[in-house]
Amino acid sequence: MSGDPGTLLLLGFLVLLVVIVVVAVADMRPRTPRTPPRPEPISPLPSTGRRPQAAVVVNPTKFPGGLDTLHAEVEATFLSRGWSPPLWMETTAEDTGRGQTRTALDAGVDVVLACGGDGTVRAVGGALAGTGVPLGLLPAGTGNLLARNLDVPVADLGRALDVTFTGSDHAIDVGRMLIDRSGRDRAPEEHAFLVMAGMGFDAAVMIGVEEVLKARIGPAAYVLSGLQALRGPQTKVRIQVDDRKPMTRRMRAVIVGNCGRLVGGVALMPAARVDDGWLDAVVLSPRGIVSWAAVTWQVVTAARRGHPRVEHLRCRRLQVVSASPTEVQLDGDPLGGARRLVVEVDPGALLVRVPAAPTGVRP
Image 1 (spheres, rainbow, N blue to C red):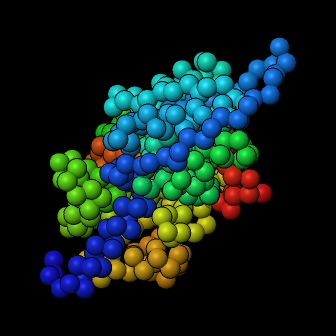
Image 2: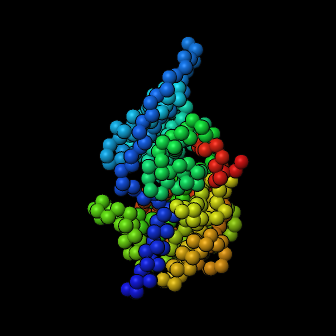
Image 3: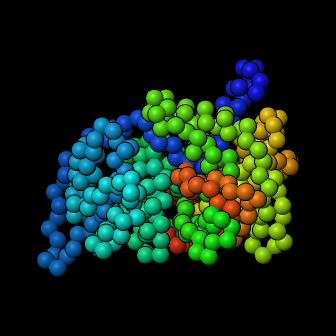
């Protein structure tokens, strides 16, 4: 790899961009919620009336300073709106949100708020899909890609919480992925995703990050991992889009998106919409630094044509068969190696509480 500063700067930018595409990087900074408001008097309800209730599924690792202030703000806000105190449920390493969401559903809550990064949102949203109970977003990660695509505030938890009371419920699509580890699994693993899933370079970046280094230098650890992953070889894959004839490619990454807008408004998949009943995909096949530079330019300019190393696809079903086990990630969570993936769209399966007039969904 050249030591030229311009080349290193380009590679650093490229890696940051690709990482942003596929993950909500763990936020190393504590977030300070706004000062809890003073609860307003609640009008008496009829004796037969029922106050609505929410559940908050929170990832405590996003709040290294503790959850007391956040808890106080959230509860005070719900009380001031005439709601019952919310159920409060923390995720664990063993259960990142699915079990807590099922408990909330059993309790009959009216909305479940996911307070964490895209991994927490994926776990909660996957459990809510098909239930008719809406998902609310309280972004507490760095990427927060679903929230960004739905215009939910990502820098102010208080404003995001207000959407619970002032927004509307909108049906979005859910991605369903079958992961076949050996290529011959009779019962492949099934996972849901809401943002993006990938095979290849993007997943290798996630796996290559050392936890000790991440704790010391934060998101920059992903840049170092990405620079190392740039040296990786292309992988031969067979890709089938819907019922079309399979095609063979030598790729570095295949990324499938339910939505395509990244941090900063950059669009990896310009045509992707979270509620159109389709999935979009991009196949990246760079060979060397010059090709990586072209890939970067294509992403930054939102171009869909013009370079053979960047190929855009649109589908309802996508199958990828790899010649060798290749790393997989789902909304930023690495899931290990696999030989075959089957990705399908589940149209309108999940209700999400969104702002009154979001730009990322159809009217």
